[in-house]
Image (cartoon, rainbow, N blue to C red; front, side, top):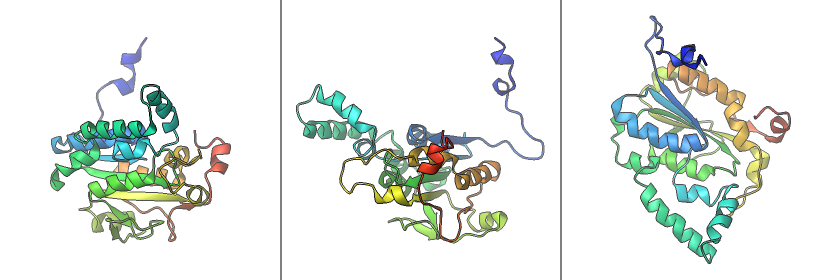
Length: 249
C-alpha cells in the first residue's frame, strides 16, 4: 500500500548544522512504562532525553488510587473473597514489578548513566495520582523550579531565568526536573483516603496545555529545561472549560 515508501518509514535524516538527537515521549501508561524503558537504556546512550507526562511509581500505589481501578477490582473480586485479598495480591505483584519499574531500576543505576528526564504532572489528577509521580521524582533525584505550585518533599529547588540560553547554562548538569500544573478546583476535590476521586479533565488536559507544549518544544529542540510558568507558577482554576470545548482530546 505504499506504506514503506513514506518518508517517516525511511532512515532518519540528519541536519548538517545540528547533530541528530533521539528523545522518548510518553503519556500516562506510556509514561509509566516509558520511565522504566528510559532508565533501562540510559547507559546505552540510545536516547538523548526523555519527557514523560503523568508518570508514576510504584504500581501498587498507582492502581488502587486511580479512577480506572474499580473495574479491575470487580474483576479480581470474582476470584477473591475480600478486598483485603485484592490489596495482598497487588502487593505481591509489586514485589515482581519492582525490578523492572522505573523506581526500582533507578535505585541500581549510577547517576552518570541516567539520561536527561522531564517529568510533568497535573495536581488534581485522579487517574494517575501525583503522589506517585513525586515518588518517581525522588527516585531520579529531580529538582523543581522555585515557582512550582507547591514544595515537594525531598526535591531541591532551583531558580530559573527568563532567558532560555542563560537558564540552560546555569542548570546544564541537571538530569531530572519535575514540573507540576495545579488545577485548583480539582485539587480541592481530591479524597484524603485510599479511594480515587471522581473523574475530571486534568489527566486529559495536561499534555496539550500551552505551558507544557512550550516546555516540551524547547526540551525536544534544544534539550533545555525551561521555566515557562508565570511568577506564581503554572496554575489553572479548572480543567472543565478546555475539556468541554474539546481542547483536551
